[in-house]
Amino acid sequence: MSLIFRLAGQRCNSQFLKNSNGLISCIRPVTLKATNVSPPSKEGHDERNMKLKRPQSPHLTIYAPQLTSLLSISHRATGIVLSGYAIGLGLGAIVLPESIPHYIDCLHEMGPAAVSFVKFSLSFPMAYHFWNGIRHLIWDTGKMLTIPQVYTTGYIMLAVTFATAGFLTVM
Amino acid sequence: MALALVLKKSLSVQATQNFFKTAIKVDSKRPFTQILSAIKKEPIKVCRESKFNTPKRLMSGDHGKLWTVERGVSVALLGMVPIALLAHNTLLDDVLAASVVIHFHWGLEANVIDYVRPIIFGHAVPKVALGLLYLVSISTLGGLIYYNHSSIGISNTVRKIWKKE
Ligand code: HEM
Image 1: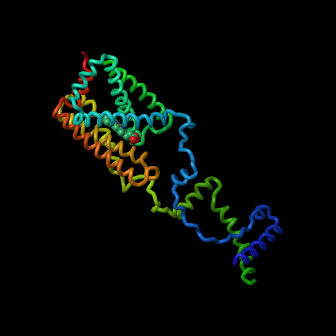
Image 2: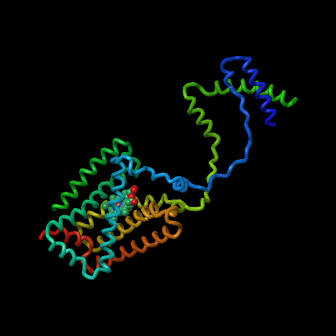
Image 3: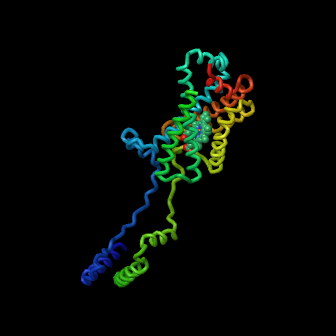
């Protein structure tokens, strides 16, 4: 069968060439050979990259930090920190030998620097996650998603966050 | 040989015909979109292998509705956090505890699914991690509600930290 096609193709070819009709002469007959379809690879994208020892994508140690990616991972980080506080309070209330108010009294005895440190450690993640959470919820409605808008709201959020956290710390 | 001759004839005729057909069909203004729309009519069947040996992530089913509920809780938290922290009311402290725990549980669950993947940790560890998270979340909710009722509660704790000497 392929022989027939090849013969036919060759004939056509020579005819076209003889024809030397500019456009058609650039059509080249091709012989197709049928082969069995190889089954789709069982190996997934992640397995393949691991096997080839490819670095993580994006390659974080060489990929330039950007406001977008930094603010994104910070939302996750502050969410995890806040969760840690909530879990600490909830489990602490059950397992700690003394009551929580007793530990707060101890904190105040340690002096204003320690209190300010705790206030900032509580208010900064909360302020960040609160204000940036608004940004996330706006994006979830499909708004403010252009790159300039993401940068503008990002800088506004950062300013408001530091103002809020600073105010709550000195309050 | 006769067949070859026939083929030769038909090929040369077809080739020229097809050439002009395509040349006429695709109008020069938006040839690419026309090609695309022609392709769209005949959907490409993507052969997707659904039974990979290792699941990439612990995912199941349709999460569309859960996503909406998660955003609803986030919007509610936006109001609940300031209101409850300023109101100093045991009931509001309980509502705050419940909404915060459900919110961080979903958040941490997403983290477990993202980072504790079967491809890295094998089949057992991700399930254990998720089970542990459930245990921690439920214990935290229980602990916070116990604290709200047996001690000063969440909002008064914050006030006590912030109180001036
Ligand atoms: C005050 C109001 C809050 C709002 C408006 C809010 C909003 C959000 C939103 C929208 C997300 C999803 C982000 C995304 O789409 O990737 C999120 C994630 C999360 N939130 Fe909150 N949140 C609030 C308070 C809290 C609190 C109090 C905690 C912990 C105690 C918390 C813990 C988390 C965690 C752990 C995540 C998952 C982060 C991630 O995996 O990306 N959030 N929050």
